Amino acid sequence: MDRLADLTTAPDPPDGPVLDWVRRSVLDALAASGVVPVEDGGPVDPARHCVVATREDPTQLRCDAIAETVRPGYLWGEALLRPQEVVAYVRPCTSEASVEGGTPDDLCNG
Image 1: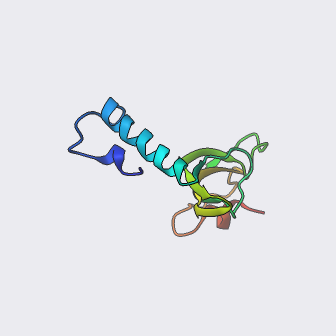
Image 2: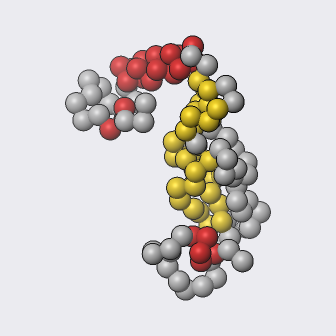
């Protein structure tokens, strides 16, 4: 599923009818097996989400909330097959430090 959009020899564009049919078929097969996609909103839950990037929230009202989904996660019953990969809101950094070489948490928390 994750690599369908990257197909260079696809018979049509990533949002075309053939790949759309393949996506729906895969999701239907997963659903028939009891696997459901996870695309939560709201607060980040480390048990269900993997933060792959951060975005500053100048309002500071959405800190530690999901800004967007990069890749959906998948559940099979109560078992997490893959966590949802997300971009999370964080407080704006007040230091001049760069995130390179560290994590956003190293620089912006506290």
